[in-house]
Image 1: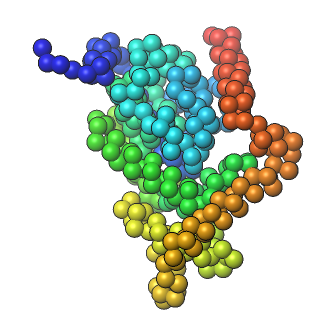
Image 2 (image 1 turned 30 degrees about the vertical axis):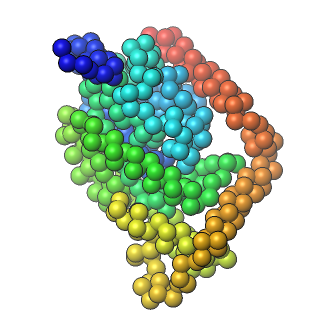
Image 3 (image 1 turned 180 degrees about the vertical axis):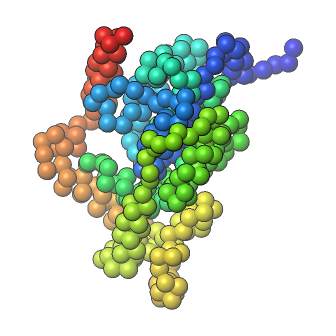
Amino acid sequence: MPNIGQAEVFRRTIVKDDKQDTYKYVFVCGLNRSGTTLLGRNIGRLENCTDFKDIPKMQVKEGWKLQDVYPLEFELGGPGRYGFNSRTHLTESSSLLSAENVAKLREAWHFFWDKGKTIRVEKTPANLLMTRFLQAAFPNSYFIVIKRHPVPVSMSTQRMWKVNITSLHRLFDHWLHCYELFEEDKKHLRHLYELTYEDYIKDPARYHQEIAAFIGTRVPEDGLDQPAGVHNKKYLERWCKLLRDSRCKNYYRYIAKKYEPRFAKHGYSLTNGMILPEELLRWEREPPAIVAILYCVCADACAFLSRFAKAKSGPKLLIEAFLPRFVLVKIWRLRLKQIVNRARRLQLSDA
């Protein structure tokens, strides 16, 4: 008998147990602020599809908030940071992939899916770095991965943080790091559909049809939300202004030059169509290494000072800025547990 690894033994066991399982599991992936919420909601409205239902006081219904098998996004550094934490990247070789944990994960999520629908949709941005783990835990799984221009993703991520501000070059690094990890992981996926936010907002009907065909369902006649391109435009215009007029324009021009070749591999540019070619030619040459380091150090310092400036706007933010991370994680877990337990009781009382 050939020697097979523990992960393969586990996978075969799950597949065997799932022979009578008629469910399909659709995981929507992409970094925070990439359009995953809108896309996931629309997929959940396709025929025979369900996303999470009846969870009051939870503004965004994401699977990571409903489980205690793998670490919380917040616990790993939060949006724009979690990808750098090695605990975020999970594969079929993860020690967390046990029969007991898979059962816990399924039970936690199945409770909030519509029992009458057989295509179950779960949207969590950090799924981008967990695809192989999820495929092993849910063999009949489909992955829909959305990618968005790094400037809107990074700038809007800065805005979504109340106090833990991150400098723009670190957010660029995070975008690249996460999608580069995914590029390797996707070679192992059996069912994968990829799209960009920019294409989606141009022709949502086309992508709804293609996704429906991919997961084996149909698009309803109405009920889907329409994406808008205004948000991308706002952030790209702001980026152009920073490159041209900011007092820190040398920093922004430096990171534009530095990251341009790497983003080009993903089909994005930090300058094309935003800065006139003749204006690009007038930019200073690449600064000496010490000057480049100072640019980034100053950007990090400004982000650090912004944390305290924002914290002064309220006692709650002040506490969040100064409490140790492990204390904040405990508070978060308690709050999420209370919300989930309350939702469970409401569902059971209505049953």
